[in-house]
Length: 207
Image (cartoon, rainbow, N blue to C red; front, top):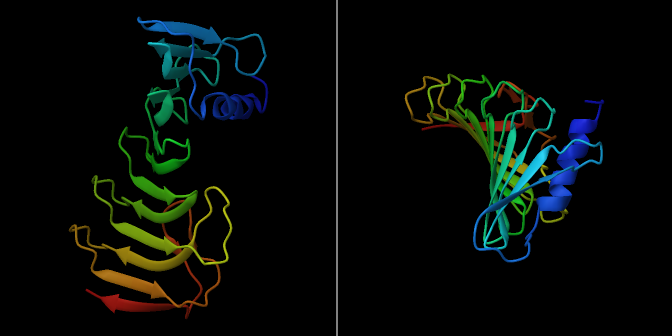
């Protein structure tokens, strides 16, 4: 696969299958192989039932193994599963509004087949993030966000951070709550789920 080809296929998936899609009416389920990026390889299989798309399977890296599956209901995309590192195990889970925009994204950081970090979105903005730092299946770090009134829509962008909850002894109870002051510099968690925050910009509350 050429450099950038996976990105091209992903973009083609969004453009072709992001919204409602119908085919000529048939009562039985049928499948059609398609070439999404015009490279001569039919890397996607589209399944139809009663004239509507119900599932799309994609081989993004052309290794003859399915690594992305998109599911539909009433012709609309509702959820997707993806093998991001091509180890034959699902490590990204996405759920969508009927408009095609995601409202939930979960990921598997340690690639054990189970989600350990979660993002919740509304109108393209992330309003809550959670991490399972010790991989016991329960979130132990949570960040809550809200949108400033003057912020315009930018897909996937975080809102203003308003609260951080931590369960540092992993007993299932968030015993530490941190509330950033309203005037703050941008605050984002790093890739390991740690908190990168400007000193003096937070207020702590014990629970």
